[in-house]
Image 1 (cartoon, rainbow, N blue to C red):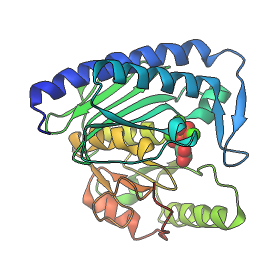
Image 2 (image 1 turned 180 degrees about the vertical axis):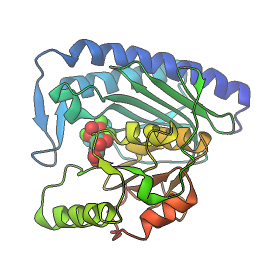
Image 3 (image 1 turned 120 degrees about the vertical axis):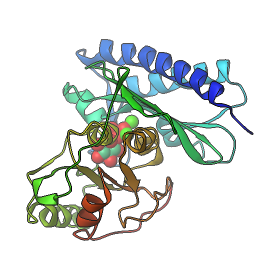
Length: 277
Ligand code: IPD
Ligand code: CA
Ligand code: CA
Ligand code: CA
């Protein structure tokens, strides 16, 4: 199926409006009492809002683009297969930063990635609390609230701000792995490591030139699909942690402003294989 640029412009308009609508729901619920459940572990949280917003997003996609496919975090949690085909497919994270949402930490985003032939071609990441709308179409630049964004020009890892996360796994082996990598990054040294609690907004921070890199193992396609398009269109690199091309289903990413930073960071990491999405 061939999509013209015109189609993608139209789809981006739809995606932004949809993210805004989802954002309203999130913003309304943000300060209210929440019903919180856990999924795979004690730090893997989900709220009513995550589920409600995902249902709304998928309903709207089905209404407007009945031939489009979708993958959504909470649908997959509910038993739907995470199956990316060549068909036009939305990859949806209704609330990226659920832990932040639960704690009222204002770093919470709606993520809408769109793939054709398994390639991410469009991304929308909307910080529902700050109102920052990050958006990109492959080949057309990246924008935050219509202002063009660009990655940092820093090439020295020692002068870099690195985004990383603990993730939600709490088994000792996995924690050792994460802590060893963090230790290895900070002893380079670097200016700092920030754990802000949203994979997508971390990637957008790299895209905006606010941080030089972001790395995480154990995330999912819905955490990085949309933001990877934004990063690449801002001049950055969305790579596998080994600096090879990004694999959307491999559950790991190294996002960087340039190859010097990417290689420097990658060489300091231990890399694990994870069960694929
Ligand atoms: C999580 C966030 C977090 C990252 C986790 C993700 P969620 O997404 O992006 O920063 O460390 O690995 O699962 O569950 O809040 O959508
Ligand atoms: Ca989650
Ligand atoms: Ca997420
Ligand atoms: Ca989520």
